[in-house]
Image 1 (cartoon, rainbow over the protein chains, first blue to last red):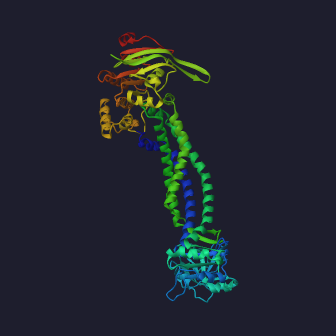
Image 2: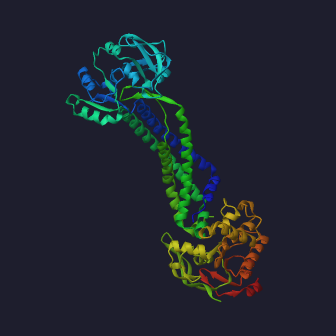
Image 3: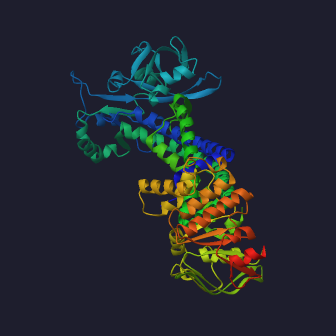
Length: 389
Length: 235
């Protein structure tokens, strides 16, 4: 049988100060670690939520995002001939040809920021039922009016009902605010696609096409027809969810790599802190180690006991760090999405996998910090240990 | 009476840098079951080293140690730990109780290495603490006990598994005279009433008086055994 856990936990009390400092150190590192993962997950969640799984997004293959994608009118017509595209009762196809441009507008703090402007038609709203006007009204088709996403509305003084936004040399009125349940659309301005094409002299080209299939189970059939049409070789299709998931990859990976790199450096400090705590625990309890060994407890029991102590300290630190990080969910921030070159607002998002990874990270610090001191305790000569008193 | 300890030509040396320090020289000793032996000698004579060797917490450089029928010098690390748990009870000069555990939990420690159930362990611990006269202190922490009481808890911990051999290293060395007498009386009782074989290292001739046999160590050599009556006469 192992050395009782109460011995491990009550020993904390005997070294309150060092234990507390170590717990604080580990919790801060785990806080930063979890915050970074929550940030990356927030980006993914926001962008993935932007798409609907039964919508299909078509862009030019060579383009990194909608902003650099061009679909000419001929191709738009070819796409209209593909099978299984959903239709309205009046027979119009559920296809939204969308021009997307990026403009500069002033942030609340005074700086300029890139914002995506999306042109849509009536079908554009229809295939995105999650988009709701929450203030003001929908823009009128045929007029130079805009509706602003909720996230923009909060951060940009010009994204308010009644404000005007300068677009291609002309002023467009903001007439409404919309919400798409925290998705990436909330960081966009929407207006009439035809007006937008005219303002930017784009003719009839659009940046992307989003369409809804009559039945998503027919996607394979649609895919076969799309892939086998030589006229569409320069273009690619994806489910809208998948498209935005891919769009989030670069930014999320960038945040993760940078963040993890920084937290790993921080974690050296916390690991050394845990190591010092455990070395002092071993030094202070040398006689106890000698006594336990003389009573018949084996080396591995001593090793397990001290390692458990180190793991418990790091686990407590990890839990504290996670609790602190969980409050970040109440905050949302914005950053430049490198793929669309425009502002993306998102919230920190916690997930079960982040909880597990953060606790594993904390335990790893505990193992690394506690292993050498625990080995030292386990290898101690009984007679020498007993004489330490 | 059968022999419980047989020390055959045991030597022990330590190395300090490149210097060999010889502590015990070719010691041979036999102790019968149920004996109460006091090991005396000046500081550095090797008495604690001999006790540690017999208790299986140190290893001889040379020679054979047969304790309770086992050649303990031949045992591996793990087997030796198991043997200690089953065969030896330790009483230390400074009690060596675990400060964060109560008297009950300290006494229970060696039983955690047995297959006894929780209820059986509780019964053993309570009975043993009653024997040492601390039935009313089971939930006290060491710092809430006097030195004498702490040593009694340590004795309870040493005998709770009913080991064949009890080793005590200066068990009264940290106690006042009255407490020391209490501890020695308890040890005497354990020897006479419970037939425990006790090997005690002490500087104190008064403590040694309670033993039935006294052996002296001088610079690593064992002198002849003397019955306690002879010692008493010389004090």
